[in-house]
Image (tube, rainbow, N blue to C red; front, side):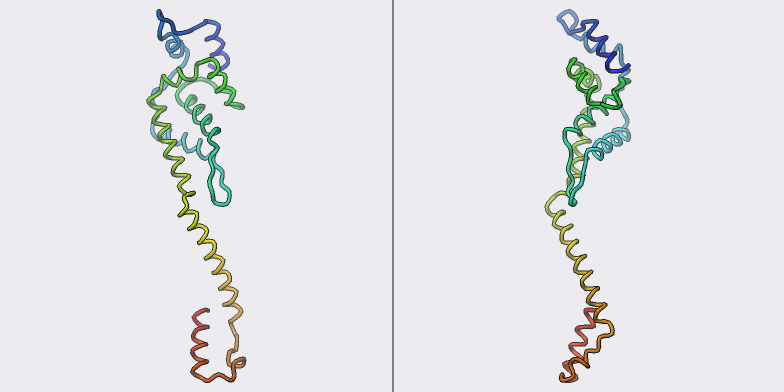
Length: 190
């Protein structure tokens, strides 16, 4: 059932929880939707990794998360995974908004709350893993690696310039022992 039709039927039937029917909304949801109260761990992980990767950008080796996009992406992914409700594929945010406005989003999630909470915990762990690269020591290490790479490049340039260099012709006035020490030093640089 698509979101628009589901909400329309809910509104048309004027369903609400009352003292006489305290679970009317939940009963309506369960009568209209096929609810999966559990999804396997592998599926949870795939969903979470997709949500995180879709909402992560990297600039100058610093990873950033679009938290709002991640939230809506996570909630709509949970709805798709746990129900047969058909969300608007082109604009899932509109489905999220419509369900929220109708007061149906929370009661639907409550039907699979335990599994939703487990997925949410997995989401937090995955985000922490992704953002671990942003810790100061990792950023500093990446910076130092970049500097060392530049020094290696500079060293290779000097090494190429020193190949075939006749030191004795330039330093003819030095004694043999001093020339051997200087030559040994320069050979170490090569």
